[in-house]
Length: 604
Image (cartoon, rainbow, N blue to C red):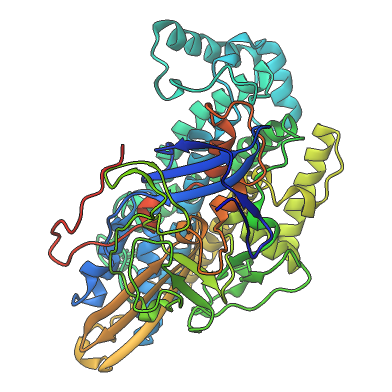
């Protein structure tokens, strides 16, 4: 390939040294990335591959659409409920079902609790170790750590020197015993780590606090959805009956005591986000103030469907607008319609699937998922032991979704750029306040347009969205309680439960602002059964391979022009990829209708 100019202006040059990271860990699923670095160890070419072949779309064909949510929810054990929610919305859209107010509020609370839980677990347990060196924390002065904590987050109650000394002692015992656990095999001597010991100790301490937090917040799902992961959903509403002061279903799980428990967990989530999560991100970022890499497509093309607009209840709780920004023009936001066959299309020219005409994309309602595992002539190695892929041919189990032919980044950063560009007051206030705090800590004067389209900006956007969702969940809770007090205890609409009342053919789409970005499910129903079902998930957008025009996906674009300290210790690659929180389990899905093995791929 040598040098290739992409439609978005990235120059891909694969003539330098090839570095392979396989598998990329601390994500959901199996991912491989290959980069070419030049003589100065700067990345000049990136190849992102989904190496896992699995899924649930094909197996749904011929099944009852009311059951689809239970299948697609198992696409992933992390995203979990967001797939179920998207699925029931798609079916309700196809059959024109309107859900009760209580069901709407309960779904919103469950979705936002998932968002909060996912974002906090992502930062502390999957991403923080790309910035934080736990071994270096052994050198910290607990008193100085306490002072740093009180400077960046004076409201957090656990800030004494003794508290940090106790954590440091625990950590020292782990290290001395050789039982580093998740901290093992890190590149802890790599100069890419910039934090002073006190910041490392503070972050590791909060890593442990987040472990305790995450097991409490998911209890909201066990009350409203029966369990976690994979809480229960229902076409037409939610399977969560209400009984308040003897009114409603006898023995129902949602009563005043349970509501008070939910409220306490939601308040804890908001407090943890404001007092711990956001301050930690800003503090860590301030020590990496010059590492403004990893923006990729976020500086150019971003997309999101926006909060769900089909339920006409209390739009004031839905503050994040959708749309598309192209070529970095924040002054123009293009409207998005997932029903429009000219807008959302998936291409397979570089994917291990087959279309009749691979120069054209297919809208998900007409989507085809037919495997075609072939390697390009430039591949090094064999079908079962690939050394280097040939990116000029097919090289991934992920398709290439495009908006009107444009590759776009999706995720919290995209949503926040879209909201900022569309002058959403709450979001603008968050970003301006956080940027002011960051600039004060770092001694810089970055603008939103400079700071946001970076790996650090992507990480900050998730933290800010966590606060936004925690606040919204409290608002949704207040409206739920108010509605119940007004005498409404309905949680499901089963008027169209009987398939004999359905039209002979119907089609629908459901969308959700999922933790990793815009999620869409498209369904076609014929004679009461699923005729076609397609999921286009956030990691399909971000992890997509090249399209017929040479356009690269968000993962590949984000790695371009990043300098590396030690290519054999790819901290910088992991740092940027983890900022997306890739979910390969969601993005690579196909299975035989009887569950039989259709092909075998060995990942070494």
